[in-house]
Image 1 (cartoon, rainbow, N blue to C red):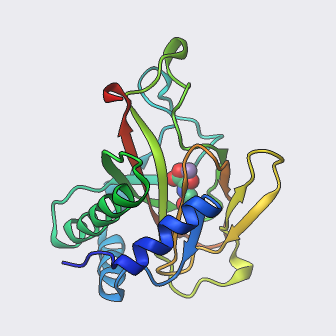
Image 2 (cartoon, rainbow, N blue to C red):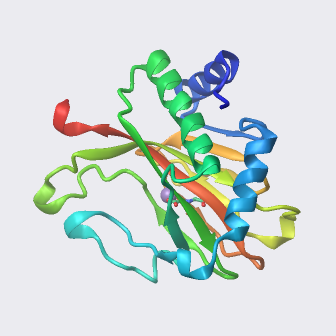
Image 3 (cartoon, helix red, strand yellow):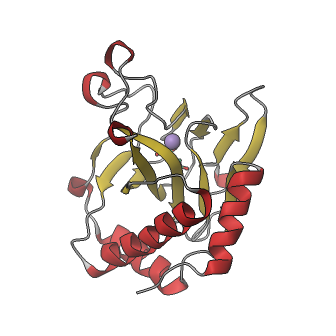
Length: 213
Ligand code: OGA
Ligand code: MN
């Protein structure tokens, strides 16, 4: 099973400290990317369900906010297990370097049908709880891996990352095969623009257990 190298981990940690986000094209091994692509393509429409926003009391289906379809990843087959193992090496490597206390990782396949979108949002649940109560497992680091072969700039579907302070666009990321994005969940509002092609990705979040802090 593959793990991240010390050099890769250093690069990610440095970027998180310097700017809070990183877009990188060659992080995951090519074989793993292709296995994930094969797994994604073999899944049926019925394997995906409508995604919600928020958790617990806030949980709701908001078609006006997002229109992707998701499938939560479990280590139930070799490819998913390898992906989760790889992300576990990222969790441990980042904890060793930045002391973020990342506790676990949750991730899902996301399928955006043609024209689907995810309006501007923040992934963190901080302060979003019922009567101001905090969620126990807050999202600290967001990741996205793209699984689209032959994606062209005129197809749309960019991830747009904004600066929290002034709403300026920091990055517009085309969802090309193997591209990996990582950012501090609390710091960056972001959105997914509609595309003229189906758009596939794996979104994931490293969480802290705030109940233990
Ligand atoms: C998300 C998300 C971004 C993307 O699922 O929360 O922001 O580019 N996804 O798919
Ligand atoms: Mn998001």
